[in-house]
Length: 373
Image (cartoon, helix red, strand yellow):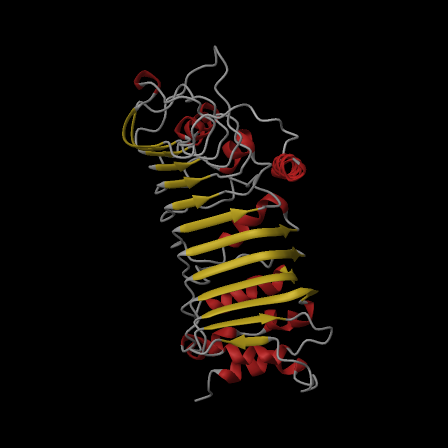
């Protein structure tokens, strides 16, 4: 039987002519567990990727260059090498810093369908060109976690629906950050039947309207955890309305690291999902407890806000675990006199030194006067 490395040799053969004097861009740890490749050299030694053949975790960064030279892989019938790919121990893969033709990306996903890959991270990529026709049957890797960070797609908001066609529907965790577009094509998007965690953090331009658009109705029936940190959220009530519009029923909601404000007086109320029992509002700049929170929670985190007094009982929901650490009213330092903002330790030190010199001089004069007496 042909050995597993031969598959990579086949795919990389057009680039094997690179000089052996080029530094190895791929490094493997002592346990042969993690392999990191950074192809930043002007003439990268792509064959160095063979060093990663026995690694469980592989990270490949293309140095910002185009991977169009590998486009022939898209025409390779990887089904012929299915048994070989199954022998690879690869479970976690990160691909970043490159311009990738869509044909190549989806061909690689098709081949990874024969692997043990469990987690895939796409980061700092530009996906170019049109994708291939969708497969006739379910294909691609059976991922549990898919992470997308700072990836642009030539197809705009249709990218998630297209990507979804090339992975099996077993995904449980989906992380999308710094997205080029979160205005998904809901009509084309398939249901994520097993998705438990959706993380849309670090999308500061999302906002509550964008969240409503991104949460396609009836596409996330198993969702339990929704994370939207640093995502342009304005009020908890606005987020509640987005959840209601999408019909999602999370158990845990993280709104930390947003600049939240109180709901405007007279704003219509909102009914929170009955399943919600954990709400994170830390690092949100809150000066008071927002009105209209769920009436009962197991966990409420209000830590590291700007609360100047302890919240009253009537301002809080019925809560099992309340966190208020890091707020000004809990500052253990005793009150001190108002300090001049222009004052500094240097000024104080100089004043003390001047006083000491003055006292020493006076003492010397007195001693001198005694000597002439």
